Image 1: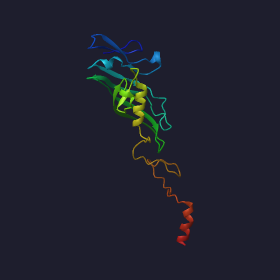
Image 2: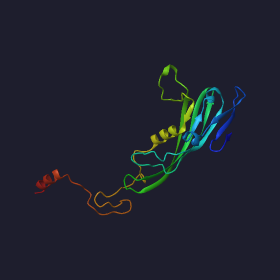
Image 3: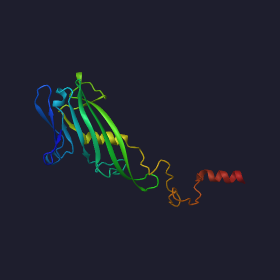
Image 4: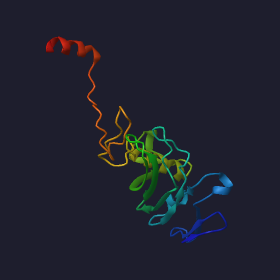
Length: 201
């Protein structure tokens, strides 16, 4: 059950191994300056336990390809689970974007959604690296960092108002999505212009 105590929500869960009630800290904004920090130490020792994860991640200060594109906090919802000793995180992210189209410079707003899944481990045997696992050695999962990484890796290399955006005329600057300016946009290499004159003569 998700509970709130001032600015510090937490989760009460009954540990089936010890029959004790464990408290899992979910938020610690005022005390730590971190948007979402989850204590999952006990989760690794509690088979069949599920912890709900829900909240907002503020990525307003993150710059992507020269733009700050996150117009509002990213809304996430999911759960942490221990299934037969395998700990996993599954969550979805609703991402509000505000940006300037890279082709026509039009201000654009849109919402996109992504889903993510991670396997978690306190450590890996032999100290070997394994991209399939997210290692959380101190048992504290920083969702701010994880969501920032997950979401930014999903974003496109170019931010467009629409997939078939025609952009701006390189000569007069008109928005070609709205008008056909009539400019002669075929550019001839000046080094080839002289050759063309000779061939035409």
